[in-house]
Image 1 (cartoon, rainbow, N blue to C red):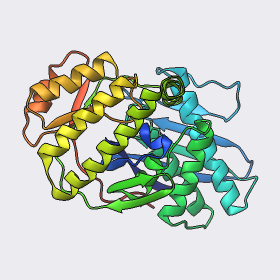
Image 2: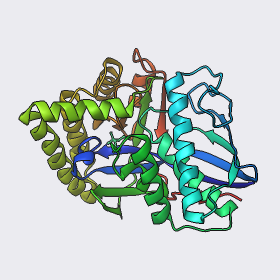
Image 3: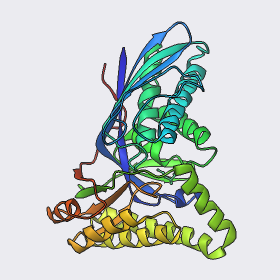
Image 4: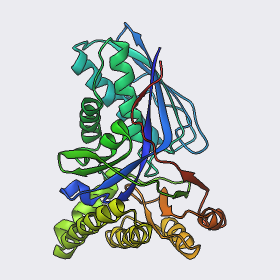
Length: 328
Ligand code: MEV
């Protein structure tokens, strides 16, 4: 058994707009997916997964389309998760030249599924690293990021940026603009997460923004305005100016809301955090449900979120300095 882990992430700025070439700044957090793999010579893929949702679940999946796993979370989420694993293994077969190889795959994750914390990117990154090493091939984090991006691109039918996968592979705070991806310096940020227990469908949400952009020139301007917020955010990050970062996060949330990707529970968590005195708060990731991220060095936001209707869980997130990690 070869095991690797990779972190989830929050977007300080720039989700959705990054799909159209604007810059984005995601930041890896210490919530990880751990993937173990063992080679099988019969070419089959068996996946055993735990804790992919808030309550956790276990699934045995033989890799065939009519074999549906019996689990207590939305079927589309599980099917999507399995699609990512299939895609990652395809990349492994291609890069190692072992086209017929199969694997037993075990996934444990403390990143809620589809909630905007980069669960799929973390699973794909860790799976590619573990499975290539199982076959005696060691890839650099940037190559893992590229292969993981191709997986997401295919599963999300061409609607993916490099942001989630690059951030998960390299760790830390990163800046992504089109094909340019790089690490950036970030101060120790007092990140607080609120989770509504739900999830959004990334493909659908990205398609919704695309439709709005096609229909209204001002929606195109809204996406471009997010790019401007991100550029200002980078300066605030460099200066370590929490007040300005918070203001810009609030602005970013407003623009995402205008693009139709927020939800009642995300908005009420954002307002719960702001009312509690957070520097700022915004949804993170594709939206539609899932998580918000707030900046607050005090305990006030966590306390307020724990009483906010619609918030199921709140926790502080530490920056993950390390991206993909080799466990054994
Ligand atoms: C999803 O985590 C982030 C989006 O910007 C899509 C992507 O960048 O691939 C909505």
